[in-house]
Length: 231
Ligand SMILES: C[S@@+](CC[C@H](N)C(=O)[O-])C[C@H]1O[C@@H](n2cnc3c(N)ncnc32)[C@H](O)[C@@H]1O
Image (cartoon, rainbow, N blue to C red):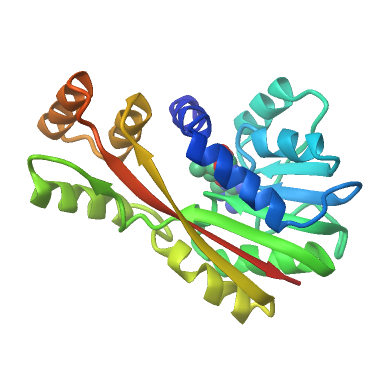
């Protein structure tokens, strides 16, 4: 958990990630006085940022250690241990729902989307964000090995290509008026290297990337899919 959190922290601080979160809040609509849930909230940053914008923001995460970190970091926030597929929230009790880099970890993301629909009041807004794990571009002297390593990582995940399916998942669950955006995250620094160390364990491949960082030649690009829709 701690290494995941360290990578999330490094990625979260990137200007592109800040902009992507801001865009997700815009797409949830007016947050003032509204109850919104961040499913799979991790360290809780988005919950704190939505609260700053006037929302009653609730963070839910399956990992008790993540909830402990979130509660320590943001003592004023409301956080619960819980499953995105069985949220500890009443039917129709929220007007905004977001899940950021979460659905790829689920065996059946449609269950989480159905749960989003259950907890949202009519007219409420949903925002899903995440990367397609088959679409990570890494500059490397070994492009074929890179392709194999990226695809092997994708194959290790329960739902690696769910992000390209967000729009269809939402439509299939009865949401309307989907808005689709793709924002490309580009990493040319330590955060990129940290990401690569979570993608692959091949020592010589990583050694090349370590060396690239020393020479200021690391380059990782990840399209981030964002889809918003209406309940
Ligand atoms: C990659 S992290 C993203 C965290 C946060 N949304 C962010 O953008 O920084 C995925 C998070 O989803 C949580 N998670 C995984 N499966 C879950 C589930 N079924 N219900 C709730 N949270 C879950 C993990 O514990 C982890 O905190």
